Image 1: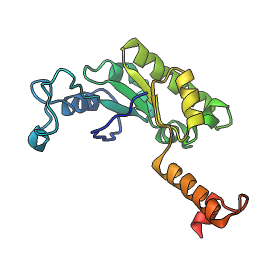
Image 2: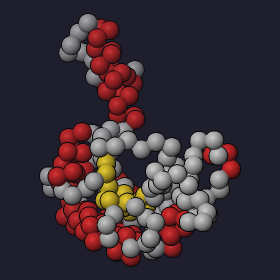
Image 3: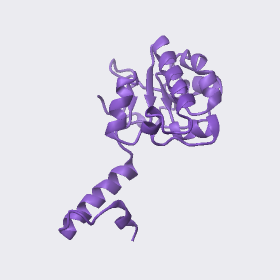
Length: 186
């Protein structure tokens, strides 16, 4: 696994390949793109052999899933990253922030969501791209990697902060059974 630094992220409601083309160009400096070089001069050498920007586009609408093969074919797009909460809303009005519930079948849209995940992984493989899926923890990340995804989050910043604070509160109280995430709200 590799951490990515100096990253810029933008989320677009993708429906076809016009925005992914613009995103891919916007990630790269001329002559390969349209990104401004500006104040990056002392930190980034876009002409260095090891310089390779990565362009991720989010697949989080039913329309983007319908057009995922066309989106994956865009030159300069490196990975397709699924936002499961928004994708669930788009597919059937039920967000899916917990992908484990999609995998174990307990989410109301488990079938259509699993189908969408599969289509994205297949399109990424066909076009030599990475497939990614946002998740909120290590257990889900492990399941994603086993299902063909190559990129995922292992935790969210809020989730990690809450777990860490709950643990520190437990230690401070000297009581292993009383601290919980609900205690942080009071």
